[in-house]
Image 1 (spheres, rainbow, N blue to C red):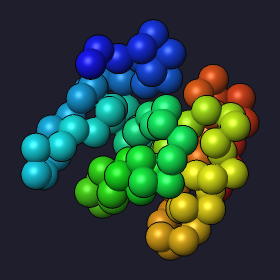
Image 2: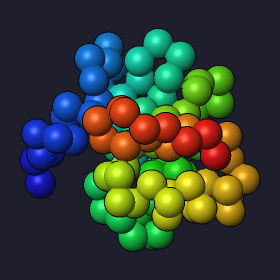
Image 3: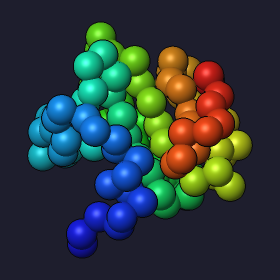
Image 4: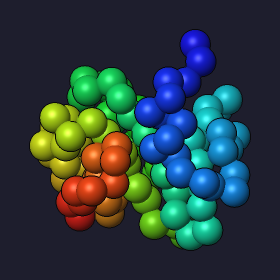
Length: 98
């Protein structure tokens, strides 16, 4: 399924998009020292899958972008997994360090 316009916009002007990672998965974008994953599906299962993709990046600052209505869910999932991830909304105006 092609990416929506807002999904593409959320990745920003990253140098590397759709970066291959292990097990046939792909990380949305790597921009300098930042690994960016955009997750528009607000279910805990989808957020967990996005976090597992971010977990593969060892020496990067991890950013999870979700719709603003899902920011609380995403922050809870990050804390539950014990990861050091910044959760932002799609337009990058609000940010929570989880």
